[in-house]
Length: 299
Image 1 (spheres, rainbow, N blue to C red):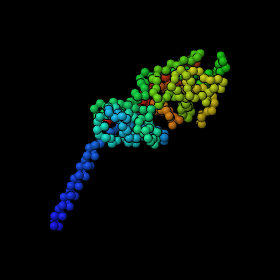
Image 2 (spheres, rainbow, N blue to C red):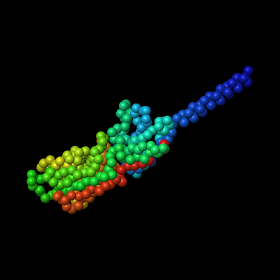
Image 3 (cartoon, one colour):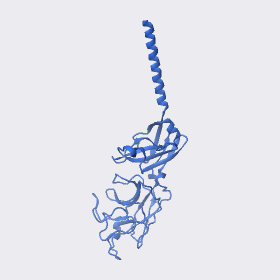
Image 4 (spheres, one colour):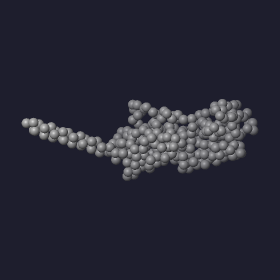
Protein backbone atom coordinates (compact mmCIF):
# COMPACT_ATOMS: atom_id res chain seq x y z
CA UNK A 1 0.00 0.00 0.00
CA UNK A 2 2.85 2.40 0.85
CA UNK A 3 4.50 1.67 -2.52
CA UNK A 4 1.26 2.41 -4.38
CA UNK A 5 0.81 5.71 -2.58
CA UNK A 6 4.42 6.70 -3.32
CA UNK A 7 4.17 5.98 -7.06
CA UNK A 8 0.80 7.75 -7.26
CA UNK A 9 2.27 10.86 -5.64
CA UNK A 10 5.30 10.67 -7.95
CA UNK A 11 3.07 10.41 -11.02
CA UNK A 12 0.98 13.35 -9.84
CA UNK A 13 4.12 15.44 -9.37
CA UNK A 14 5.37 14.60 -12.86
CA UNK A 15 1.96 15.45 -14.32
CA UNK A 16 1.88 18.79 -12.49
CA UNK A 17 5.41 19.58 -13.60
CA UNK A 18 4.54 18.71 -17.19
CA UNK A 19 1.46 20.95 -17.08
CA UNK A 20 3.56 23.77 -15.65
CA UNK A 21 6.12 23.36 -18.44
CA UNK A 22 3.34 23.37 -21.03
CA UNK A 23 1.90 26.57 -19.53
CA UNK A 24 5.32 28.21 -19.62
CA UNK A 25 5.82 27.19 -23.23
CA UNK A 26 2.37 28.41 -24.18
CA UNK A 27 2.99 31.73 -22.43
CA UNK A 28 6.33 32.13 -24.18
CA UNK A 29 4.81 31.29 -27.56
CA UNK A 30 2.10 33.91 -27.08
CA UNK A 31 4.58 36.78 -26.99
CA UNK A 32 7.26 38.07 -29.33
CA UNK A 33 9.99 40.69 -29.23
CA UNK A 34 9.83 44.06 -30.96
CA UNK A 35 13.21 45.77 -31.40
CA UNK A 36 13.71 49.50 -31.94
CA UNK A 37 16.75 51.00 -33.66
CA UNK A 38 15.99 54.72 -33.69
CA UNK A 39 18.31 57.63 -34.41
CA UNK A 40 18.02 61.36 -33.82
CA UNK A 41 15.78 61.40 -30.75
CA UNK A 42 16.59 63.60 -27.79
CA UNK A 43 15.67 63.47 -24.10
CA UNK A 44 12.23 64.74 -23.20
CA UNK A 45 11.46 66.83 -20.13
CA UNK A 46 10.48 65.13 -16.91
CA UNK A 47 6.76 65.39 -17.75
CA UNK A 48 6.86 63.48 -21.05
CA UNK A 49 7.94 60.11 -22.43
CA UNK A 50 8.08 58.34 -25.80
CA UNK A 51 5.65 55.49 -26.47
CA UNK A 52 5.54 52.92 -29.25
CA UNK A 53 2.31 51.66 -30.82
CA UNK A 54 1.33 49.05 -33.41
CA UNK A 55 -1.69 49.41 -35.65
CA UNK A 56 -3.48 46.04 -35.86
CA UNK A 57 -6.38 45.49 -38.30
CA UNK A 58 -9.53 44.58 -36.41
CA UNK A 59 -8.42 46.26 -33.18
CA UNK A 60 -10.45 49.33 -32.25
CA UNK A 61 -7.43 51.12 -30.75
CA UNK A 62 -3.68 51.11 -31.41
CA UNK A 63 -1.79 48.65 -29.21
CA UNK A 64 0.93 50.09 -26.97
CA UNK A 65 4.31 48.38 -27.21
CA UNK A 66 5.81 50.24 -24.24
CA UNK A 67 7.36 53.46 -22.94
CA UNK A 68 10.94 54.67 -23.30
CA UNK A 69 13.11 57.77 -23.16
CA UNK A 70 16.61 58.58 -24.42
CA UNK A 71 19.75 59.91 -22.80
CA UNK A 72 21.81 62.93 -23.81
CA UNK A 73 23.61 60.81 -26.40
CA UNK A 74 20.32 59.70 -27.97
CA UNK A 75 20.53 56.12 -26.67
CA UNK A 76 17.14 54.57 -25.91
CA UNK A 77 16.42 53.54 -22.32
CA UNK A 78 14.94 50.31 -23.74
CA UNK A 79 15.22 48.82 -27.23
CA UNK A 80 13.45 45.46 -26.91
CA UNK A 81 9.78 45.12 -25.97
CA UNK A 82 7.60 42.06 -25.34
CA UNK A 83 4.38 42.19 -27.38
CA UNK A 84 1.46 39.84 -28.00
CA UNK A 85 2.74 37.60 -30.82
CA UNK A 86 -0.51 37.43 -32.81
CA UNK A 87 -1.02 41.19 -32.67
CA UNK A 88 2.58 41.88 -33.64
CA UNK A 89 2.40 39.49 -36.57
CA UNK A 90 -0.82 41.13 -37.82
CA UNK A 91 0.39 44.71 -37.32
CA UNK A 92 0.60 46.86 -40.43
CA UNK A 93 2.15 50.04 -38.99
CA UNK A 94 4.36 51.25 -36.15
CA UNK A 95 4.06 54.68 -34.53
CA UNK A 96 6.05 56.59 -31.90
CA UNK A 97 4.26 59.33 -29.98
CA UNK A 98 5.18 61.74 -27.18
CA UNK A 99 2.97 61.17 -24.15
CA UNK A 100 2.46 62.86 -20.76
CA UNK A 101 3.97 60.90 -17.89
CA UNK A 102 1.44 59.07 -15.72
CA UNK A 103 -1.48 59.00 -18.15
CA UNK A 104 -4.50 57.02 -16.97
CA UNK A 105 -7.95 56.13 -18.26
CA UNK A 106 -8.91 56.60 -21.89
CA UNK A 107 -5.99 58.96 -22.56
CA UNK A 108 -3.56 56.10 -21.87
CA UNK A 109 -5.24 53.86 -24.46
CA UNK A 110 -4.78 56.10 -27.48
CA UNK A 111 -1.72 57.98 -28.83
CA UNK A 112 -1.57 61.72 -28.20
CA UNK A 113 -1.66 64.16 -31.12
CA UNK A 114 2.13 64.42 -30.86
CA UNK A 115 2.84 61.45 -33.12
CA UNK A 116 6.47 61.74 -34.18
CA UNK A 117 7.52 58.65 -36.17
CA UNK A 118 5.59 56.28 -38.41
CA UNK A 119 6.41 53.38 -40.72
CA UNK A 120 4.62 50.56 -42.52
CA UNK A 121 5.67 46.97 -41.84
CA UNK A 122 7.12 45.10 -44.81
CA UNK A 123 7.82 41.57 -43.71
CA UNK A 124 9.61 41.76 -40.37
CA UNK A 125 10.70 45.41 -40.52
CA UNK A 126 9.31 48.92 -40.67
CA UNK A 127 11.37 51.94 -41.71
CA UNK A 128 10.10 54.86 -39.63
CA UNK A 129 10.40 58.60 -40.27
CA UNK A 130 8.72 61.92 -39.44
CA UNK A 131 6.33 61.82 -42.38
CA UNK A 132 3.39 61.79 -39.97
CA UNK A 133 4.43 65.32 -38.90
CA UNK A 134 5.02 66.60 -42.42
CA UNK A 135 7.03 66.34 -45.63
CA UNK A 136 10.00 68.69 -45.33
CA UNK A 137 11.81 67.59 -48.48
CA UNK A 138 11.07 70.91 -50.23
CA UNK A 139 11.49 73.11 -47.14
CA UNK A 140 12.70 76.65 -47.85
CA UNK A 141 12.14 80.25 -46.82
CA UNK A 142 13.73 83.62 -46.20
CA UNK A 143 14.06 86.09 -43.34
CA UNK A 144 15.02 89.73 -43.09
CA UNK A 145 16.44 92.10 -40.47
CA UNK A 146 14.21 94.97 -39.44
CA UNK A 147 12.71 96.47 -36.26
CA UNK A 148 9.10 97.33 -37.19
CA UNK A 149 7.90 97.45 -33.57
CA UNK A 150 10.43 100.21 -32.79
CA UNK A 151 9.42 102.51 -35.64
CA UNK A 152 7.06 105.44 -35.86
CA UNK A 153 4.68 105.12 -38.81
CA UNK A 154 6.57 105.63 -42.07
CA UNK A 155 9.84 106.28 -40.19
CA UNK A 156 12.81 103.93 -39.87
CA UNK A 157 14.95 104.37 -36.75
CA UNK A 158 18.05 102.99 -38.45
CA UNK A 159 18.43 100.09 -36.02
CA UNK A 160 17.12 97.23 -38.15
CA UNK A 161 19.95 94.91 -37.11
CA UNK A 162 18.10 94.30 -33.83
CA UNK A 163 15.13 92.40 -35.27
CA UNK A 164 14.44 89.31 -37.40
CA UNK A 165 11.22 88.52 -39.27
CA UNK A 166 10.27 85.54 -41.41
CA UNK A 167 9.13 86.19 -44.96
CA UNK A 168 9.82 88.78 -47.65
CA UNK A 169 10.24 92.45 -46.62
CA UNK A 170 7.64 94.91 -47.82
CA UNK A 171 4.85 97.19 -46.69
CA UNK A 172 3.56 94.93 -45.24
CA UNK A 173 5.93 91.93 -45.31
CA UNK A 174 4.60 88.76 -46.91
CA UNK A 175 5.14 85.10 -46.01
CA UNK A 176 7.25 82.93 -48.30
CA UNK A 177 7.87 79.69 -46.40
CA UNK A 178 7.68 76.41 -48.27
CA UNK A 179 6.75 74.25 -45.30
CA UNK A 180 3.95 71.76 -44.64
CA UNK A 181 0.91 72.71 -42.61
CA UNK A 182 1.44 70.85 -39.36
CA UNK A 183 -1.15 68.49 -37.86
CA UNK A 184 -2.65 69.03 -34.41
CA UNK A 185 -0.03 68.56 -31.70
CA UNK A 186 2.74 70.45 -33.49
CA UNK A 187 3.83 74.06 -34.11
CA UNK A 188 6.76 75.89 -35.67
CA UNK A 189 9.05 78.04 -33.53
CA UNK A 190 11.63 80.62 -34.57
CA UNK A 191 15.01 81.05 -32.86
CA UNK A 192 18.07 83.26 -32.92
CA UNK A 193 21.27 81.86 -31.40
CA UNK A 194 22.42 84.42 -28.83
CA UNK A 195 25.50 84.58 -26.64
CA UNK A 196 24.30 81.87 -24.25
CA UNK A 197 22.05 79.78 -26.49
CA UNK A 198 18.81 79.82 -28.50
CA UNK A 199 16.40 82.75 -27.99
CA UNK A 200 12.80 82.07 -29.05
CA UNK A 201 10.98 84.43 -31.39
CA UNK A 202 7.67 82.63 -30.70
CA UNK A 203 5.62 79.70 -31.98
CA UNK A 204 3.38 79.85 -35.04
CA UNK A 205 1.26 77.71 -37.34
CA UNK A 206 0.16 80.49 -39.73
CA UNK A 207 2.93 81.94 -41.91
CA UNK A 208 0.88 85.03 -42.65
CA UNK A 209 0.13 86.11 -39.08
CA UNK A 210 1.95 87.24 -35.94
CA UNK A 211 3.38 84.50 -33.76
CA UNK A 212 2.61 83.73 -30.10
CA UNK A 213 5.33 85.91 -28.55
CA UNK A 214 6.19 89.59 -28.40
CA UNK A 215 7.80 90.11 -24.98
CA UNK A 216 11.07 91.34 -26.47
CA UNK A 217 9.34 93.64 -28.98
CA UNK A 218 6.57 96.20 -29.31
CA UNK A 219 8.34 99.22 -27.91
CA UNK A 220 6.12 101.45 -30.09
CA UNK A 221 3.66 99.33 -32.09
CA UNK A 222 2.65 95.72 -32.84
CA UNK A 223 4.68 93.69 -35.28
CA UNK A 224 3.78 93.03 -38.92
CA UNK A 225 1.60 90.09 -40.05
CA UNK A 226 4.45 87.56 -40.18
CA UNK A 227 6.29 85.66 -37.42
CA UNK A 228 9.36 87.34 -35.95
CA UNK A 229 10.74 89.42 -33.12
CA UNK A 230 12.63 92.60 -32.26
CA UNK A 231 15.13 92.28 -29.41
CA UNK A 232 14.86 95.33 -27.15
CA UNK A 233 13.07 94.37 -23.91
CA UNK A 234 13.47 91.82 -21.09
CA UNK A 235 16.69 90.14 -22.21
CA UNK A 236 17.08 86.54 -21.00
CA UNK A 237 19.79 85.81 -18.44
CA UNK A 238 23.23 86.05 -20.01
CA UNK A 239 22.05 88.11 -23.00
CA UNK A 240 22.40 91.83 -23.66
CA UNK A 241 19.69 93.70 -25.58
CA UNK A 242 19.40 95.23 -28.06
CA UNK A 243 20.67 92.09 -29.76
CA UNK A 244 22.49 92.52 -33.06
CA UNK A 245 21.23 89.65 -35.23
CA UNK A 246 23.83 90.13 -37.98
CA UNK A 247 26.07 87.10 -38.34
CA UNK A 248 23.90 84.99 -36.03
CA UNK A 249 22.27 81.66 -36.77
CA UNK A 250 18.50 81.75 -37.29
CA UNK A 251 16.49 78.53 -36.92
CA UNK A 252 12.97 77.28 -37.51
CA UNK A 253 12.12 74.20 -35.43
CA UNK A 254 9.08 71.95 -35.16
CA UNK A 255 7.85 71.74 -31.56
CA UNK A 256 5.44 69.37 -29.79
CA UNK A 257 2.35 70.97 -28.25
CA UNK A 258 2.40 71.02 -25.27
CA UNK A 259 6.16 71.56 -25.02
CA UNK A 260 7.95 71.35 -21.68
CA UNK A 261 11.39 72.42 -22.90
CA UNK A 262 12.65 76.02 -23.28
CA UNK A 263 15.07 74.86 -26.00
CA UNK A 264 14.44 73.87 -29.63
CA UNK A 265 13.10 70.38 -30.25
CA UNK A 266 15.26 68.00 -32.25
CA UNK A 267 13.41 68.73 -35.52
CA UNK A 268 15.01 71.84 -37.09
CA UNK A 269 14.20 71.71 -40.81
CA UNK A 270 15.44 75.24 -41.64
CA UNK A 271 18.67 76.96 -40.57
CA UNK A 272 20.27 80.13 -41.91
CA UNK A 273 22.88 82.72 -41.00
CA UNK A 274 22.00 86.39 -41.05
CA UNK A 275 24.20 88.51 -43.29
CA UNK A 276 25.19 92.12 -42.71
CA UNK A 277 22.41 93.59 -44.85
CA UNK A 278 19.14 94.75 -43.30
CA UNK A 279 15.79 95.14 -45.10
CA UNK A 280 14.99 95.40 -47.95
CA UNK A 281 17.61 92.67 -48.33
CA UNK A 282 16.62 89.18 -47.23
CA UNK A 283 18.55 86.06 -46.23
CA UNK A 284 17.92 82.46 -47.24
CA UNK A 285 17.22 79.52 -45.00
CA UNK A 286 18.95 76.26 -45.90
CA UNK A 287 17.54 72.78 -45.38
CA UNK A 288 18.64 70.97 -42.23
CA UNK A 289 16.87 67.65 -42.73
CA UNK A 290 19.58 65.65 -40.99
CA UNK A 291 17.95 66.62 -37.68
CA UNK A 292 14.79 64.65 -38.48
CA UNK A 293 14.67 61.36 -36.52
CA UNK A 294 14.57 58.05 -38.41
CA UNK A 295 15.00 54.38 -37.64
CA UNK A 296 14.13 50.74 -38.13
CA UNK A 297 11.68 48.59 -36.16
CA UNK A 298 12.02 44.81 -36.28
CA UNK A 299 9.48 42.17 -35.19
